[in-house]
Each structure stands twice: as C-alpha cells, then as structure tokens.
Image (cartoon, rainbow, N blue to C red; front, side, top):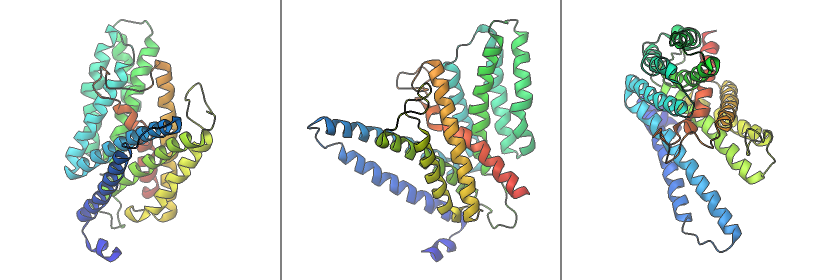
Length: 329
C-alpha cells in the first residue's frame, strides 16, 4: 500500500486522502443516524440521546470543515484564496452584528469589509508574505481609529475601535493564514504541489483536539476551571485534548515536510493556540451575553460560522509563522 501511494503524483495523493476522510465521515454519519432510532425508555436513554445529538452536531461541523478544504484544494490556489476571503467576510459580519456600533462607525466598517479584507487576501494570493503579516496589525490598526475620529463621534471611542480591530484580527487576519499555507515553499524537501497536505494537517490536528476536549468534558464531568468564562472548560480535559491532537500530528508526519518530532511540536503549537483561541471567543460570547455567534434565527445568516472556525482563526497564524520561521532558518 505504501509503495502504491508513493507511486501516485501529488494531486492523486491529496485526492486519495480526501477520499479516505470522506469515507470515514460517511461511515460515522450513517452510524450516528441509525442510532437515532433507538427508543428512549428511561432518563439514562434520554441523556444518551442528548449526547448523540451533540455528537451529530460535531460531525456536522467536521463535514463543514472537510468540504471547505476540499473545495479549496479542488478549485486551485486562486479560488481557495477567494473562498477563504468569503468565509472571513461572513465571519466578520457575524462578529460585528453582535457588537454594537454607531453611525460614526460606518466609514470604518466600509473600510474593514471592502478595503482591508480584499487587500489582505490579495497580498496572500500574490505572495507578499512580509507585507501581509504586518498589513493588519500595523497599517490597519493605525488607520481605523483615524477614520473613526474623522467621523466626529467620540462617544465610547476606544471601545468601538477595539471591537472592530479585534474582529478584523480574528476573522480576516487569522483566516487569511489558511490559504497562505498552500503557497509556502520548502526547497530541497520534495514537497512541491503537496501544500494541501499542510492545510489538512493543521485542520485535522486542531479539530481532533477540540473534538476530544468536548467529548472528554461531557464524559469526565470535571468542574469548570473558569466558570465565569465557560461552563465546560477544564484544564485537565484541555490538556488531554492538546496531547491527543499532538499525537495525531506526529502520526501524520508522513504527509508533511516535517520529521515525526517536528510534526509533534508543530501540532502541539497549533493545538495550544486553537484551545486558547476557543477560550477567548467563549469569553467574548459571555461578554455579549450569547451562547453562540449565530443560530438558526440569527440575523447574520451565517448560522454560527464563527463557532466553526474560531479555533482555526487563532491556530492558523501561529502555525504559519512557526513553520515559515523554522524552515527559513
């Protein structure tokens, strides 16, 4: 089998990988659907069905992530960048919708959605890596308050600008680093045309980490470590999820330009960043008084898109710069 996989070209290897992943998701989804026919006869069965419903929700999130990245690979680098730009657009819209704004913010909002976002992803598509890494945290963070000040509305000025800057940082800057992974080059490592594996590696280790943390929190029922922020977050289950995601990364070293030890370290960095990012977004939701960034009646129309990608928005830039720094040394 290993010899057969090595005989395939890079595109065929990526296609085979997605075929395996889709197959596993189909098996898991069909199994979960068939289990829904089990009758509830007591309180224990009712609790079991609640856990099954939660598992099916997590499966749906996994389907979303895999389909998005399959489309990103299948449509090519340019279309992948456009796809993630659209994800960033709707995620930012969802974030801003739950953050109060004033009339004086309209120019800043137009700048964020229709100037900053396109330029950031254009810089990614054209491989201006040095500029795209500082464009948002330097130029945009200085320009937005200036535009807001010109509007002449000083009421809650710092709070309003901080919210918009934070939304851009997470939704635009973080998301833009995912397609940027597909543009990295690794001279001398025979990795040309295989960058989609790197994106898959990042998504899988972070998703496995978050999934296991969620399942362990429900099974182990440990008291929350930070009850004011999250009713389910516990340092023990978070640590176990990070270790599991790191182990998955080490096992997937063969699809990356990393050696097993390097893959373990990179996966660990991504899982820690994703875990802390997810915790930060939970704190923001508590501050806004909501349990999710969107739902079926959400006016954003995004139906919780930010809930699906929040950990990735934090993990992607940390992972990208760790990889680029390590292999450029």
